[in-house]
Image (cartoon, rainbow, N blue to C red):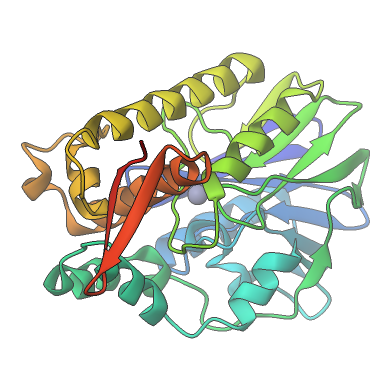
Length: 323
Ligand SMILES: [Zn+2]
């Protein structure tokens, strides 16, 4: 499915089978000289077919196209190697290029999750089902690095890169000030809240995410083109909702910690999630993984604010309220 949103700016919906996200929005800017494709889909046949069909309908040739990727998640990056031609520039952020090129598998995340109470027997199953493991790119093409504020010109569109760390540490949005359009990746979504996970004691992605929301709030925007679901017109209203959501979650974590000495997996099991399941035990294991990462991002922020403290004993980290 292919629709023109603005002159020569199209959306191709790339199906994401089995995912609650339903589809990825790939945006294509068509130009007589050079086209730009923004985000690609998973490295699987359903996505490739939808992309190639859409590009064919638009008369967009891969040999005359460059590709911009908002962030490293497989539903955005996965298909890039199948679409890149010899002449394509693949535009990407520096922190994520470095992360991908030094990636040594999930082992360190597994160790970290275990230390946060994620049951070891469920870990392997969680990772087998992780889309990054199943449908990630087979190889990484040469990536051209972008920094905050860099321009990208394509046809009549003159974008500026807006670094928006949070959902991932190198996430980039594209802002077009004349058209007042923001291509938002997974920084701002409607109906669903972008997942903010943390798998490290040194990072604080939720803090960065909230700062990135404030940064985008200040931009003059008429239309947000998100990575999934519907387009968003009132970015101020949506950003306020997202900030409110995290405020509630932070308070929920503090409430849960009125019983001291709990690990992140236990805390996640008591938090409120959108997913419809009878109980935490009925959650698909991949969702428990995301939920635990999300719980840790909230704990990290509370810890840096001095509201929560940790104690690690026998390899297991437990959290309590600071008093
Ligand atoms: Zn996504």
